[in-house]
Length: 290
Length: 290
Image (tube, rainbow over all chains, first blue to last red; front, side, top):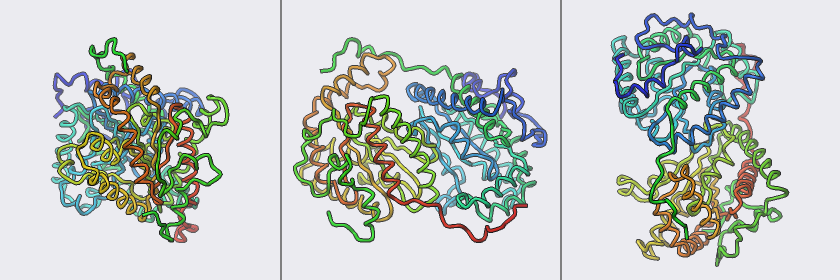
């Protein structure tokens, strides 16, 4: 499961943090054991290089760079990019999409927000609806939540057995291997906030009438299961960080830093793909349009 | 077909150009007869109020306003917005999406680029694939081309009879009425460029190697049918400008002006919907998050 396929080396390489990058410490390498979220400080800012204002300016510059790279990515047409954002309520998935891809033409980025499955969806295997929404050649798709909910909610609530959970990890790894080996770069980010930070953010939604629509009383029930969810995340980070789709834990108490880190990694990954415009069409040489 | 349903008056009103707006002259009102594209100068700039740089700054400001309104549109959740962009090759559909919605989080705007139907799509009626992609409540969808291709390509190439074309106009009007009466604001823009302008834009794609991927020799064949396409557009503008989904012709030789006009209309339409955050949830009053 953790071996590399030679011919996909280049694509896989783009997925892996260079050893000298601040990214390296936050990426969960394949085969890593004993992932403990308490080893990852959600208040850390490994990508920050200055004041908050400076970091914000860098996020904006990166978001514009990503816009330019997306255009080339589409013209190149050899790859697909799937960005998966996971994290508890208020961890900042929506804000990441706005911050990182808010400068990109909606032509180039498609977002899918995954909710509880509908009845026809439940009547199929749990990867059925996911497979339908993976990016096509030249396209970038961002998953706001994902198939990883299927190894979180049912696990924490005891709806599936540990054996079934292990089966699902394997299904997911196999599915993502299919995607990777057919040209999809799969970037997975776990937005990691602290328990106190979540309290503040939920309280803000309660106190601000214009944020009530983002809040449901059920969010408080889920918050009570915090420890169980952290454990379920640790297990999935360990089980599904593969050579073809490793996870990155993103310290996300700071919204600016969270965007800075993810935008940097997305930009670096796109750059590492050696994108290029398709070769010149000789039939167009000297052609005059009448 | 052109009567208004009383209870939808407010929604329909948002769709119609106020008489004192420069929009009015470019909107094809329901029941308008004898639409002639030569009466619409593609080089005109009815929304311009200053230099090109000033207009560009206004486009950016409008795009940011649309971003804010989109957020409220989603929170409000009572409406859906479908923006349809039609126009010949190089008329600027992609550029419009980038210019008008490029400041909006991809969370809030979903783009669908319609191509020639696939085999399973052809095995259904021509509105089947379209219906699947219409926006859900709170969502904005932009169609880059649309079901109107089905009353353009087959008409110009003589694949369907005039009777079948008339049938299709009726299907489309009925379909759009369903959408409008169930909460969808349907904004339809025909991007109108001149024959000479298209020559220049195609030539640019031929001459610039990094634009070859946007060009196909088939585009030149379509260009030879220019007059037939203009006629087919005139016919559909006349037949499918309804009270619930009128067309607007957009003079589009100037890219800046095109974006300015469409961004203004989209912004004005969103504003006219009287969007609001959902009412305060009394259960949240004084609630403390633990």
